[in-house]
Length: 285
Image (cartoon, rainbow, N blue to C red):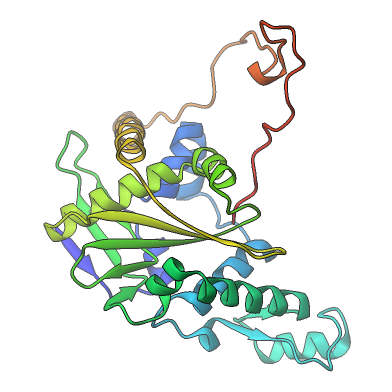
């Protein structure tokens, strides 16, 4: 068993151990998992970069200046000559334009004004951000596993995960919890930390912050069903990964032609009512 806090984010992601995002790829298909692990790295996106910058700003102990830089007021756009020169001068850092900077400031304000969120992230709790945890699965797979919590208390009792979202309401975040398998993340982190340290954290808490007006914040604790179902699915994914590695065969969706129908939410209900069109997943970054 191994736990380390010395890895950079890049070093952590380069490590071959299985992460929650690997499980997500495996849930799609063997080809998706293989591409994620062995394919060329995917380019970052502005949305992902903004999330990274917000994490650097909000997590206790992180140095925002090492991750991102705000574009000066006199530079109107990254596309201008001055904007390109500024980006070159700060190569390797995330460049926040004026609207990004405004959103980040409002999100930070929202967190500071939320009693529970501010209590968790104001830096007064003794803990560390972005620690890397590794262990070996003691189940049937014997695979190396890893996780990197946003913030964990020094006594190991609590894991805090920060999410930027378009809807931090209870119903909105429930959809995100399901669509992006954050219930699997909660279960996975609790499991890996327990195997790596010998102590299981008592709770996994999400701090969800809207990245658009009115920049509301919601704080949610993953319940027992989240953890139970999340771990069941994580084990299924892990068993598939072990099987693919052993056989060297990484299947796609299906090897044959299959019948396809409309999703259930589009089909007429028994009472004849037209289905509601509120099924669409909410993008969460």
